[in-house]
Image (cartoon, rainbow, N blue to C red; front, side, top):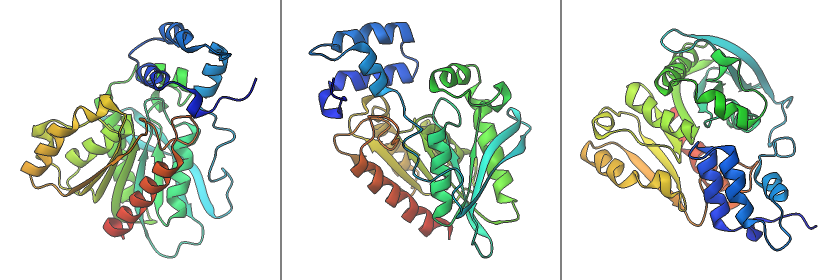
Length: 295
């Protein structure tokens, strides 16, 4: 059988996966519904294999890239989960102090894709910190299904405190100039929005397809925002009109982009939801934004 391609797959399969990935349905129901699309020589097992993240073959920056000083550290999150592990990365040839970027994972812990994004960020001339909010439960367990299950056991406000603590750690790091931004994906997009709410000195926030704060919370935002959305992401996009109205009402500086014909998760190059054109453009805009606001 020929390998599946994105164009072989009904859009409903991507929507179904989104429901599963965001805990709207359990795995049994997901597989059951997926079987409806196992037609024309396409099997359930091939669909599952196709839509499951492939981390091994899709790293952009190698774990041991010689251009980087990248290592795991721990920091204290007294209002959150206590001691939190994170991947700290910076360019080896950096001279002087660097601006910092917190990289926030999806709803499954610090998986290889997010670690890779942390390394990509460092190669652009930043010191990045990618925390693992699953640390109090043993850390990312090595696969996303178990990671999602673990993350459901933690309170999201406590996890928000873990990322606020990461901001404080990075701001005071000897290699950081104190100018900190945040980029996050999915759950991490919500965290990015909420860090802008909670941290008056945050310099920039880039939520990728993230949930939105309330109108009352939005009024507290001081940081400029670069908001990245997927056109086909009906679930997240439903909250945008109200959020935009609140941003305008409170004179918050923001730019929003909707990427045509792409799904939630389009930046994640390890899954078939990945869209190279949108991912490349959105990442360029992200780095340009951080260069403008943090350096």
